[in-house]
Amino acid sequence: MDLKQLYQDIILEHGKSPRNFGKCKQHTHEAKGYNPLCGDKVQVFLKLDKEKKVEEITFEGSGCAISIASTSIMTELVTGKSLESANKIIFNFFDMIKNTEKIKTDELDEDQKTKIMSLSGV
Image 1: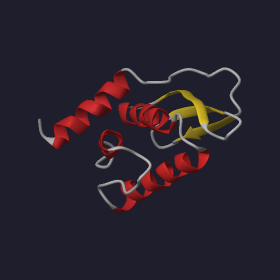
Image 2: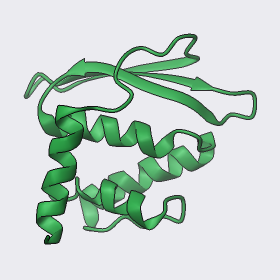
Image 3: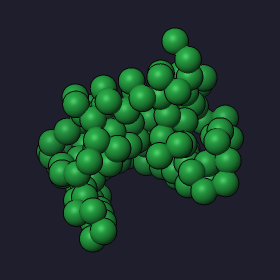
Image 4: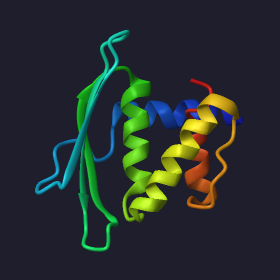
C-alpha cells in the first residue's frame, strides 16, 4: 500500500468512526470552532488531571470527513499527554499544514506521526 492510500484510509476510518465522540463528564475546559465557509462545527471538551495532563478529551460536532477525522485524530494523540506536550503537538501540526509535509516533534512516536501526517495534503 502506498503512503497516499494509507493517508486516505486513516482519514476515512476516523471520519466514519470518530474516536472520543461525545461530551466527557466533568470537563475542565471547552472550546468551540466554526468554519462559516463550509459549515463545520466542532466543540471540544477537555478534562485535565491535577498534574495538568490530558485525562480525557472528547468532541461533538458536524462537518466533512476531514473535519471530523482531524478532531478524532487530535483527541487520540493528546490523551495522556501533559498540557505542554499537547500544545507542542498542536503547534507542530499547524506548522506542518502551513509549511511542510512532515510533522517535526519528539512528542509522538512514528505511528502517531503517520496518523497526523495523513492530514498534510488536505
